[in-house]
Image 1 (cartoon, helix red, strand yellow):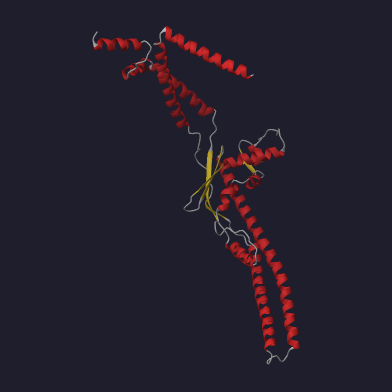
Image 2: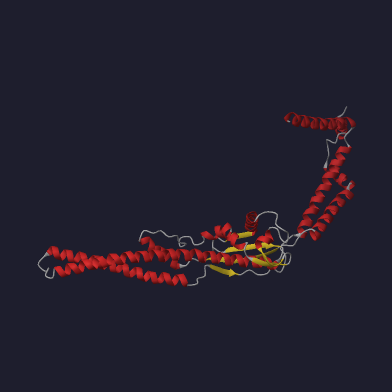
Length: 356
């Protein structure tokens, strides 16, 4: 038997079980099943279009660009306190560290869910806690559980990106209403500024209290030193010829001078601290305020249809190839597949039965 005849016999034998499929065979299979390959993507795309139009809710993203601001007075007062052994936190070394943590903190979220907003879906003057949890329905759980759910939901809504080079933050919120998204971002910036103001006001108050205590104690020490100097001067009016008395007088005068300088400095800083307490500083710099988005950000309907079309096309091609493959399997091979399937189910069922 010639080599060509042997090869042809070998190919015919293997073609019966579909072992050899060339590119030409694949093209023929696709051409044969062109209707299936076309219909499946069409059906999937139609379902996707129906879902995208009638069963999805448009979403709107509102964003703002902000930057942290650390008052210089806080670092000055902390530097003064450190001279007396008190270490007060400042933002001078890294003024932006709090923003990443505070914006997504539970403390800020708890303050936000107490605010009220107007929405088309839930009506006017509804708390964010109600909007994020039970809506207009009656709550089925307690207030504590609702608060935790609302806090977690709100934190997940926050999108925060930081430009490392400029230190500018992009703060974004996504909801199903354009105006509501904008109001959420604006309210969050207000709460952030209020939190920073209260934080720095607390530091200023602690510094003022510390300075007042030091003024009181320094004043007592100064009065004692002045009284000692007065008594020494009254008792020793002629000390020119006594080195010991001169040294004692210089020591007393030096003590009075040092305490007078400390007392004067503390009084000056106390006035500065009082001014800082009443001064209204800007702790959050808003570079770009939030604006009402004109266009919706999602869902991306065109992308959804395109992805579903590609998926349907691949599904149609795979279905056509597999159907052609199984059609070429003879009865003996098909019985092997059926037997393997039954053995698989039998072993799985027996395994779980023994487990019980």
